[in-house]
Amino acid sequence: MSLETCDLAIVGSGLTGISAAIAAYSKNPEHIIKIYGIPFDSHTAKKGEIENIPGIEKIVGVDYIQQMITQIQKLNEEFKKEGQPDKLEFINENVTVIAKNETHFQLISESRHIQAKAIIISTGLPELKHSLKGEDQFVHKGVSHCAVCDGALFRGRKVAIIGGGNFVARGALFLRKYCKKVTVISPNPSLECDNRFLKKFLSSPNVAFKYGVDLNTVEIYGSQTVEGIKFQEEEEIRELTVNAVFVELKDKPDLSILKDITLEVSHEGYVNTNATNATNIEGIFAAGSICGIRDYIPILMGDGYRAGIFASEYLDK
Image (cartoon, rainbow, N blue to C red; front, side, top):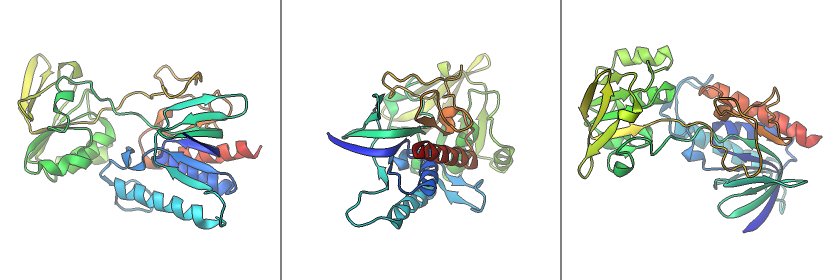
């Protein structure tokens, strides 16, 4: 396993992490910055059409991530001199361990051992998988965890999508274009999304909603592939005939990669930061939904950008 060094390691290569990298580079292009993670596996990449970015009327999530990757690559070439290492670089590997010694942070990825002077953690919220009866049994057989990735495969079919918030609303609006009927199953009393999405659903006769569903009662069933889903609604067991179930649930932050490092968290499990995005551990910053930031792209971008600026200033000191 090769040993690498950098000034700033950004753990998480989605929208927030890339924004942090751009900010840190702009603040001081002399710092060596490495971004770890799989950009196209980020939540933004899995979104459908995005329409809430100022200055961009409409863009698909995966295309937006590709534009940001291209921007990073161009910035890396801006002041690069022949024979010098990259100043700004994507490492398409997930970090599995973060530790700390007296002088540096130690990070381990799938094939690398990294030493860094500072870290920004922007890993977002993990998908809540393996939580529904029948879910694991039918993965790739009608169960998917990405409506935007797999929705078109079920053109003309009946499907269900489970979850809440703007993320699921976007997924349902994407599915309605291809599927005969889309049933949104939410564990919450409402979808808890922006009213703008709700207005779009008013003109979507092929989208139905089931609210307040106890996820413990959900069962996905079938023979070789998904054939239906059962769940308890009020006092009755409901049964829907569907060909696919899209599980779009989010879990609490996963901080298991931190070895012998204890970050202060809120009672809900989100990482606590101060006004400079610094955590209780000197040299570790955090940004984005891992801190409980709402899932709005401009907010996530801004939080990442702020973390990048203050991490760069920390390194300058």
